[in-house]
Image 1 (cartoon, helix red, strand yellow):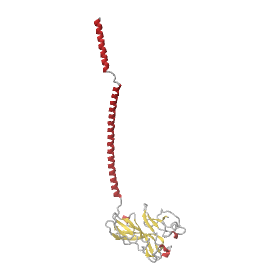
Image 2 (tube, one colour):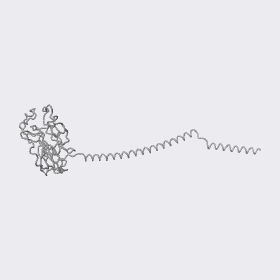
Image 3 (tube, helix red, strand yellow):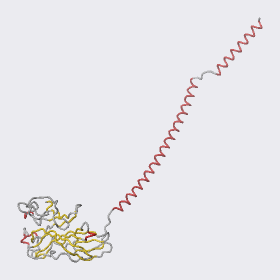
Length: 304
């Protein structure tokens, strides 16, 4: 009985020691240990986050750097292209001919050749590449020459100091040119100019002729805008063909000062040929579809 009891106590003691041993092995960490472990984890997490964001930032910086470089290259290339395009499109001034006498109108016959009216000179065929020129023969014989100026006819008398008794042309001379829409086939060239009649003075006239080499042939008068007066100003004479194939002509009011206007100005007077726009067929006849301004309107009137 004593032995059994002693063995039982020994067994219990061994079991208690094992339990205590197990407790020591599996005990909960102390507060300090837990704090230390938490701090180490936080430091690791913080370090990991820093590394992560540093990596992301470096990737972003690299992306921005590459994008900026590409944009800069593209912008530089675009600027170069724009500069080249601008340089190519900007006109370059080049003198191809000198010594002309008041050049007034020019019409191209080809890329290199053109017809040119000198207001104080001749009708020329010019070569814009070589600079050569040839005079076209056959221009109208009634082309206005200089007129001896009587300044008493131009109020106020002092409007042209020093001009009294001298020969002047002022606005007179050759004006505009126009090529017939079928010029390549029919060779019709249209010319406006200041026509002169010895005792009656000057007026606007429009003619056409066929250009054969350097000769104008078969001249026809299409329009004369009276009255013939000694006034050498404001003839008008603009010529153009419309999309309808009709010839449009502008006529000036032929007055130098507003004080010369009558109570009903010449441009608003339907029976006065001056200060108007005319619409004609290429042969000078009046188109059937011209506006009807009444019986008192001048023939060929298109606008006033």
